[in-house]
Amino acid sequence: MGMLLAAATGMPTILFTAGLGVVVCFWLLVAVGRATPRAFDADVDLEALGMGGVPVAVVLSLLTAIAWVLGTSAALLLAAHGPSGVAGGLLRLSASAAALLLSWRLTRLVVPRLGRLFRERAGRGRTERDTAFV
Image (tube, rainbow, N blue to C red):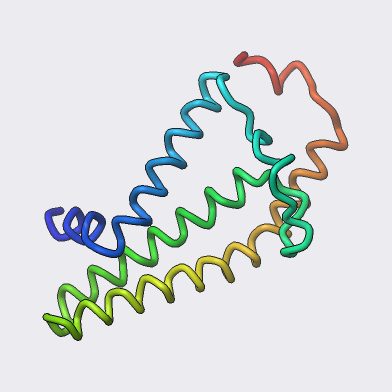
């Protein structure tokens, strides 16, 4: 557990951890009704990036979560088996950059599938069951 905490809070993975904290806080606000999942849709157009049809908050949350998992995993592997010193630091930095790029690619693969889900849900309209917990 100590290695995971050190990997998640070490440089440069701490940037992904901070982003994940923002994502969790946003979804807590959505859960209590103070924000909506479509809060940022007017600010960003994801159609140009090939990720349209899904709320921006969902896309960024997915991107952040995948980047955190990949970056933290890479940091754990490098802590156990990688070099130390300047070479280790440069390797951790490049592994975090690679984690971000790979998470971008994975998010682009997942979003079209999620887009179909959101279109189906929007097509059937809101039912009593959808708003039962509100």
